[in-house]
Amino acid sequence: MAEHDAERGYLLDNRQSEAGIRFGALSELFDPVTFRHVDRLGISTGMRCWEVGAGSPSVPLGLAERVGPTGAVVATDIDVSWTEGVTGGVVEVLRHDVAADPPPPGGFDLVHARLVLVHVTDRAEALRRMVQALRPGGRLLLEDADPGLQPLLCPDESGPEQRLANRLRSGFRALMAARGADLTYGRTLPRLLREAGLEDVRADAYFPVTSPACSVLEAATVRQIRGLLVSEGLATDDEIDRHLANVATGCLDLATAPMVSAWGRRP
Image (cartoon, rainbow, N blue to C red; front, side):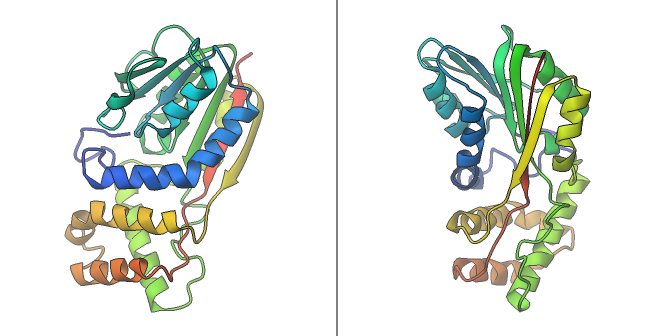
């Protein structure tokens, strides 16, 4: 998801070229988790789904496969540059701010957002609107990061390369927090879903370690925020170059922050 406010908006702007690389890595890492939950919730032929903060097309297309030609998938984001190409058939792509705009009309059997609300300043309002959009019996599936639960890029901090990686990850977290991200949001999802009136609330968490996609994601992320890391005094150009070279060796056991998935049903 992208915001246009340069001071408070989304740190990882979808309009930058590295965004496509990040989307591909995130899909490889987390699509299997997302669709395991989607299938467990029974999303199937003829259902209507709202994908919030779609970013890339992988989740909308996966949902479209499940709902078939008689279903519908509405994919929304503030920046739709990476998803507008999949408009057509059962997929509709809309420019939309989940915390400010009314939900798309019609009601939904599934509302899903992945790695979105942690970056939204008015998370409570966004959640309220997502619950409002559910049909009776509809399911809300929220998946968000919790960097506070596992803050290290290299959990096995065994040498100088790992220590440098973790220091740059600390700088990344500082930049996120300065933009309004809640670095402990993921752990609150089960409680927030219950407080929103949903039933049968469940949750789990997942974070990969030593996946090639973790290295791709890290390199693209660091290149995307490089200028800010340097301008804010969080790293030097030489440190960033060394870190990117270390990542390129494939010898660092890189991890992501845990992604907490929580789901519940509207009565």
